[in-house]
Length: 376
Image (cartoon, rainbow, N blue to C red):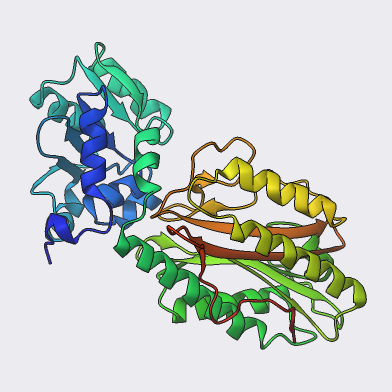
């Protein structure tokens, strides 16, 4: 099952260039997402057991070393492109001790190393600084974030597939909504449909009805659907470790004039922002456009973001928010997330994935575009 470097999902050439251009002697991936990106293999227990650390140490001059818990070594060796796989014995030696041995072997223990300081727990960080007191440590997150915002053709295909599979799951689940069933019933049906579409896991399932739709991420409850309710969900799955994130809304019975008015205005905002997902635009510009348009149409805008890129994590850069200065380029993807909520009363939500091209953006909604409110 061992793959070659040319077969990996991520852009290793870009990553290698970023490491070479950095002022670091080595870069260390430690989070499940960046270990997955760099080594192209997912270690399931790394996500669930925080002390079972895995590292990929990539020196500025040389080949990367993959360090994992001994019980995971055989699996990693069979599935990663990295040739040098090392292991540590859990409960016998600490993963940091094994990491330090590699840094010393590479002769960088007194140099400058970038590691994911936002992920590494304080006790592990303290152990690292105690064992390497002369090591200069900086955050590796900015480097990985910059690399991962550009999606390879394989990544793009996977993310679009995940989005459209989730969209189909939404349509199947929402089309069967019945008066009297609970939010939990709908959420179970939606989650099951996401899994049936090929996801390994359901990543999020915020599915609500009636007054509960006025909250952004309320867990599904025992509330029973009533005639005239709005039903909405902001949900997604994990497909080969790449996330989907879809927002959709439905109406139980005939929409009111107010429903139709709000939905029409929200769709206008949605279209306006999506049309400007173009090369050279920034997340800040799109955010200001969304806010300006929404307020012009008589709807309040109280949100801190209006969309984000997506991949191995749910919120990747560029993000559509007031501070995002990164210009969009070909090869990027973003969600556009348009919504209106009145807490404890009602809420409407739509979220789609958009591809940045050298021309007009591509809107990948296919099976459940939700242009009109779905009536159930």
